[in-house]
Amino acid sequence: MCPVGVGGLQAWIGGIRAGSVASCGNHVKASCRWIAFNAESAGVLGIVPLECEDGGKRTVSQLCCHSDVVTDFDFSPFDQLLLATGSADETVSARCQGPRGARCVKVWRLPESGQDMPSGAGLTLGPGGGPVDMLQFHPTADGVLASGAGKRVTVWDVGQQQPLTALDSHGDQLQSLAWKPDGRLLGTSCKDKKLRIFDPRASPAASQVLSLQGVLGDVVASALPDQGAVGWAWCP
Image (cartoon, rainbow, N blue to C red; front, side, top):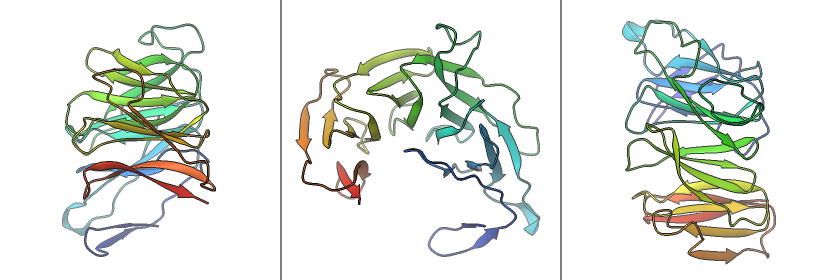
């Protein structure tokens, strides 16, 4: 079951058949209209309305996104119906201009309500450099999306379906990424125990590198809205 509410429990959504996914990404996210979560079947997201009218029962729909596990997904902060998904699958698509077997990010437009889920992505972004492990829309620039795959972060112009920049200065597998709340900086962490801070508009090289060799466990970059910075935490 998944609780729904802000400032205290308001409702429960029962009968959810969620999957168990081992990845660095998110496994449940919500916009102002929809809640998305990893379903039991690989490559499928469960989609359920955030609110139901007149106390009615919420219907769980399925969005068949990829042929492998959905590793991360994110709703646009500017469009509550726009959902980006990533996976380890090898996408073959006319819209994905890359070699056969290239990994792509898919962007979906969900219906307003009471309609069938789309059977295909509205557009794809790629190819990527490996399984897409993490995704996050820019908090202040409409249509800008960061994706993490392998040792590379790519910042995309979603509307143009083109990369704006690639951030390659990572010494090991990426574990997390996070935009600063004002969108000026991007923080990343990876298995080399370093937190990197980028200004993607200025340079593809990291502007700051913090060594965290004494930290036990996985380092995770996270946005801290109250402090207006990109911070880090770790999972022992």
